[in-house]
Image: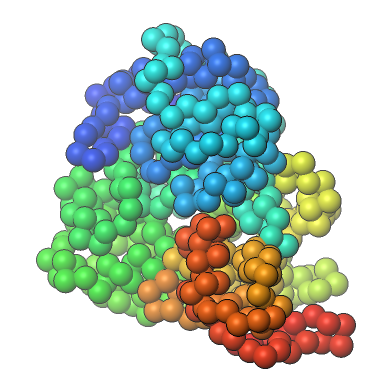
Length: 483
């Protein structure tokens, strides 16, 4: 999919429609196109071309999406970076991804630590080229459009390579299930797959993006009504927070057609409460990984209520999505039996950047081994039953336990550590570390140690000390006995 050319055509078709709303200011499609072209020509002058990587380390803002579009307009590759990432995490990503240019509103002294990095652009206006002519677009749909970094279960970050072809499928899936928004309230980080997804909506459907820097319940509700947003992507924690606000009693949310709690399973009680309060709004659950250019599975709008409120319900796959559930030996399981969820189709990632071994572990015979446990019912609906991988989902964001364990284990006073999830009403799960010590150490000292080395959402909220941790005969920690 040539995303830039779609955006170019959309800007020509509806030049006066709002493309962005941010901090009370607006940018229409016509002016957004001019800006994207200027950014693209500036990056081109700085050497960004096919095969080169542009890293983006910004909070949610119009520039984030326009930088995506400019990169796509050059047929280059974007590397989004979580704004909450620490300096060390950013350096690791830039080095592994071999980024040549970084756009950021921060100015950390990192250039000397990243040999591939030629430019750090912290004030784009100083670089901005006045050239407004169209950008060339992509040459080959199999070229890598984005490398999205997810933390590995060994503490190693993996760069998921999605091609321009891959990026066409999320929109195809949502379009197939008749989700065609005119205005989207953006409250999830653009540094995750949401960035490319919102860019796709804007380019292919002409959606207006109303951007929030951070989630504030009252402001969130006010913006939906003020700008007549009809779609919101929000993890279940946001939905629950909305239901607890006093402002919700006065809100009508007449314009809102869909709310999509992607990123974590949505509890049936949240469905029930939201449906009762806003019967006109469709809650759309779905499923997919960054590795599969999510979403791949969507709960149809016409699904019966008994299905919609069933625990673990995800939805049905799009026609081009193959799904099967297998046991530990790879044998396909019958309906109702829990096993690992496998996905197959042209939407599956190219692989992990510069990690052929890790790629081979998850891509086998054309199937993506998701590491998630689930089952299919007799009607073809997919359900989630748990996670084979050791993942903690807090506020819709994934935290891999071994990444946190890797950091804590480096503390000089720590002997052993196991990181698990602990339930939380607001965030779904919190990160909990169970630690045995070499010498006396406070919980706050460990938390502070983590804060200097991990993004804030990955830092343990609960620390428990034990004299020793239970182990198997082979010396592995028995996490099941720690919960």
